[in-house]
Length: 306
Ligand SMILES: C[C@@](CO)(OP(=O)(O)O)[C@H](O)COP(=O)(O)OP(=O)(O)OC[C@H]1O[C@@H](n2ccc(N)nc2=O)[C@H](O)[C@@H]1O
Ligand SMILES: Nc1ncnc2c1ncn2[C@@H]1O[C@H](COP(=O)(O)OP(=O)(O)O)[C@@H](O)[C@H]1O
Image 1: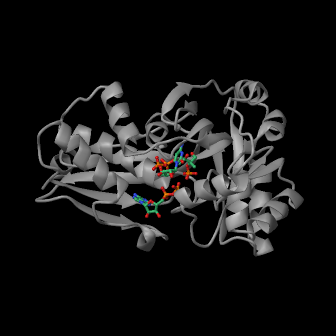
Image 2 (image 1 turned 180 degrees about the vertical axis):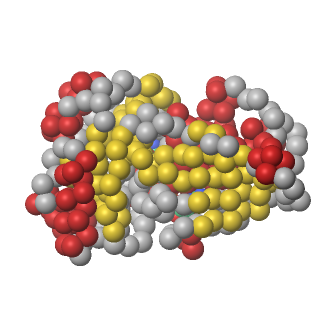
């Protein structure tokens, strides 16, 4: 097959990780989910998903954490292909190859990212021409975080996090992410939140005006002062060693430290790219995490590369 033919028969989509700069969690709903005010920011750690025609649905994955990624129909990329195919009355006869750079089960929405990427890739490969609204609808069915992976940038997620309002960001923010050994289960962290807050009055989750203003102005010092994550006590309760990681990043000069979403990745906002390099080196040297990665935000959402 010539290179031109190959390009026509494969679609590659690049998709970002996220950090939650505010995660306000309400009381558990009757359906088991929690209403949120979830301020998502897409960051420059990316997975790539390539879709190619195949006799049947297959998933492969490469990358340092590939062994921890399921390759069956529970993979969110596979689920995306199945849902899209069902909606169009066709079979999901596609091979999905994931190049994984986003930490697995790390609170950075890596599985959601692959779901959004596979959806976009299959839509292009199969020539379906779905509208943005149709794709967002399938994303919401796949998971609460999946719509944001499609749109990227910055957005406020309400409901269970799937109803998005785009947010303005006035500049680049620089981050360091400390990647932990092993993951944390998102339902387990929400369950621990319920246990820790049992009997307490839980306010309606609302977006912080100070945080939205800090994003708008692009001011990292103001954003650092406004970062909050209501799931952090639950993640730290399940993984007490996270306290040492947070302390190591703060001691190294980060403007602020917090758990990324349900964890166990920890996020450090720093003042610029040079500070990101030095904080990452200090975190690695501290021995409190498996590895430290630098990134900046906002990053674009799922994008067809080729
Ligand atoms: C916590 C967050 C923060 O962005 O992400 P991670 O940090 O894990 O990536 C999200 O709320 C995770 O979203 P996502 O991982 O898509 O969750 P889903 O598949 O929709 O739900 C998995 C489970 O998480 C719990 N869940 C999820 C979302 C929500 N608003 N309330 C919940 O209680 C429920 O127990 C649900 O069964
Ligand atoms: N494409 C995928 N990549 C990673 N994990 C996936 C994927 N599809 C399904 N999973 C499952 O989802 C779980 C959560 O993974 P992930 O989305 O990376 O973390 P988080 O929900 O903390 O952001 C994993 O433990 C894995 O079992």
